[in-house]
Length: 115
Length: 113
Image (tube, rainbow over all chains, first blue to last red; front, side, top):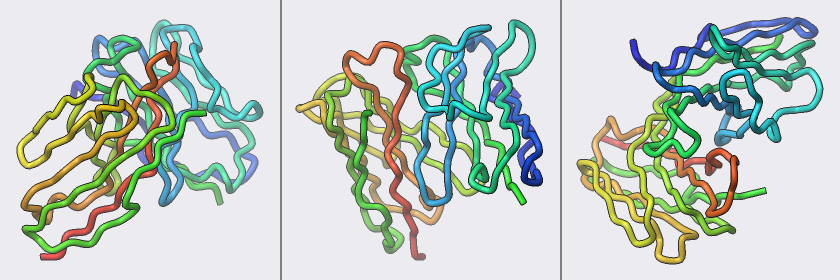
């Protein structure tokens, strides 16, 4: 499968635990974007990364949330000490360059449920 | 920040009917994109627009980049049951630097057979 791969598809965490969401971009894509979708809402931008660099994290909460895209391996979105309000679908997208002519390619998402 | 206003929020239509939805922005955009999201899946790109006035078709779908650069519309002709889903507009402003795509809240389409 040459698409954007996200895992896990579903993740259940108790309040206070950590959630780790993984994203492997399409082959040849070095730009990764994370978006959050709440029920009945659109996609809210969180963070934009290029290999080993965070380019724009203006949409990511300053506390408990972090993201990385190491030289080797997938991009990781980490949520520490999860709360019920973190329950949402988290989507990763990738593009071959910033301008992403042709748009971003999205993964199928990780649905996080905090209980 | 940038805001996209997408309307209508939801639509219930009969199979075979045509559908029209639109998106407006408070800023001038240089790129407009339309995505569809099926239940439990990620958004899939339908049409991309890069020039003011551009009209592009993809099968039964037609989208246009508004002349003012602040709006776009998507039409679906002769709807079928598999058109059900959420349609999102997305765009990027003219001088947005490294700002990634911003999305509308979506139009939820239901097709009654």
